[in-house]
Length: 409
Image (cartoon, rainbow, N blue to C red; front, top):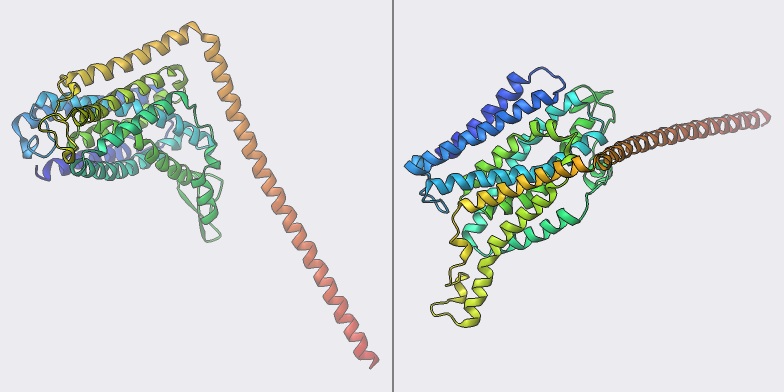
């Protein structure tokens, strides 16, 4: 495969981002649900439209697509794996949305500035995801047993995400926030849409920049489960990269649609856990066949090859089973959440009230901490002033005493 498909895709992505921020959202404004829903539909349509390109490109081997290492021979398989990977990444991004909402609430970023922060956050995520996917593809290509590690990791993440509970740590208390505030100048007041502000000739970070850094670090953490999951569907690096990036591109608009109603889809976390277990099962089934061939001394088995002679049945399943299972689990999660929410409206209201109460408590705690810091700063300043006055008086008295002594002499 030539470099043309990679460069062409990156040009398309950066062109869409430039059109989004530089033209269509050039004017700072609060994005309402209707506008966000429109943009969500546009991004999903573009992702699905790209699947048409995937089909014809692999069918006709445009620019060498379909001939590279790890590629699919069948264009239909390539297309279905692209859509399956896109659905997995989209579903896993729901955790990102919940964390983004918590970060913006903690740093009190106004709604009209959130789009700008998310734009640069997505841009940084594209670079980091690309690097991580490149490393993952190189590892999988050289060491097939890495997929077994991915499978074991997905089992852990599936159990943890489903039953481990949510991390309710205030973003201001996270290690990255403390590190940034300790080692760089930070001003807690927002200065418009600026990430940096100047005070008395010195440059300070604003809450927008701190929120952006925390979002970037959070995305790296979430990539730990999303990238192994997509490699469980396909090892084609081009499909892994393009499906992952298209899922990220629509994350900003999806955030403005779902941030306030995400708790209504609590059942989706069980779907996500089931999807991760499904992918892990696909990745780890060959391990069982490997040990089966080893234990039974299957003719032709070579332990050093790390490949079983017996063909795992998951490899004989048609590719469309990925799409059916993943899509079906997502639908079950959405429908189940809506039915549960309808039958337990009181519980949903209580959750919403608790969430508001927690947000208010965090805001009050933040204000209290700020007031305590201000009072401590004032007290220190007063102590310094008193000490300075006392020293000045002592010096004056000493000077007078010396003057008197000299006069007497």
